[in-house]
Image (cartoon, rainbow, N blue to C red; front, side):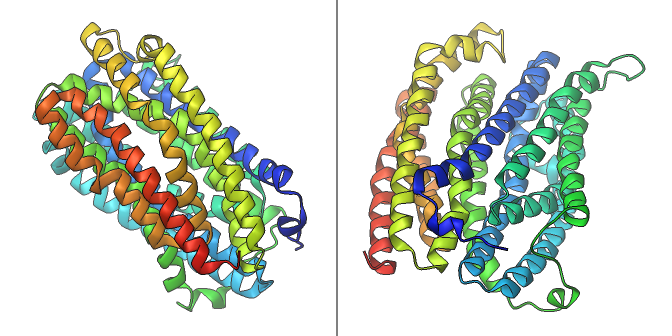
Length: 445
């Protein structure tokens, strides 16, 4: 199990070889989110509203899976860098066990409490009915999501980016194909409406889970699960020490969306729909950058374990440059084609007009977010979960929530949109200062 290429291969080709598969899979995943919303929007605007309200909980479930997976990724990559393969295997086994437990708990809690959650935001019986139906079906797949993403992060820690890319794409394409079939019906398959969208999503998540299990048992994987490792809790603290901050990093947007929905609903349900559409679209811009972060995270962890600090610094600078290019492109698209983009999800003129304004204002924030995304991702790769969490708290709670509340009282819903770019400017400065401080404390540069 030779992983030396992570500390010997030239930086640019190394980062590209690790990140491009992730970027491609993230783009396909973003496309799946957009296609999913596109078909649901064809059912009715009420269905789209229900999907927007359920989205924060879906995002929370995924956040727990990905965040804890980041902890597994960082711990495994670190031990591989120190060439302690037994500790890498033990931490993998314990991480998988915990992921399975998370999935069972989340499935029960979310299915039971989704009606109470939705009633905080709407009393519309149609929206409530659609939201509860969609949510309960989607949440039933929580176990599959948790364990499937855990395997994904394990393979990524080993540098198997091409494999995880293929599996993620297969899952997304499965969902895209099933969406229109199950929502509108085809041949003997009846039209299921919003329930069909939830089932299609669940099947799309189950396919990668099955494929990861197949590759583990039938194809070569250098790390193996040993029963005796499951009897220990030796690595729980390290896994959660990185995994909990990483989970909060990813879950915080769910908190933000829920609070912003509460602010916007006081003006009109149209603005809730606009925010829901924006967050679907935003993934198409942010996912490529997140793909790069996923690609470089095991590189950072491995080189940190190997004490190759100069390489980590070079990886950081290259990642920041690539992220800036992606974000500039996203901003230009939102400025030039906002009406065409929003038109994919709504034909309601009032919703369309409000969405055009929102896209143009919020997209200003994309460029500034490059610094916080890159700094937070590299800090997670270093196992520094708390500093990364501080950056995310600034982005999603500490700055934006008071800013959105104050500006909305002055400017109405437009004030909420302006809060995004103002927050990203301040957070960019904070993230750069945090990263430089941690780099000075930890590296001999």
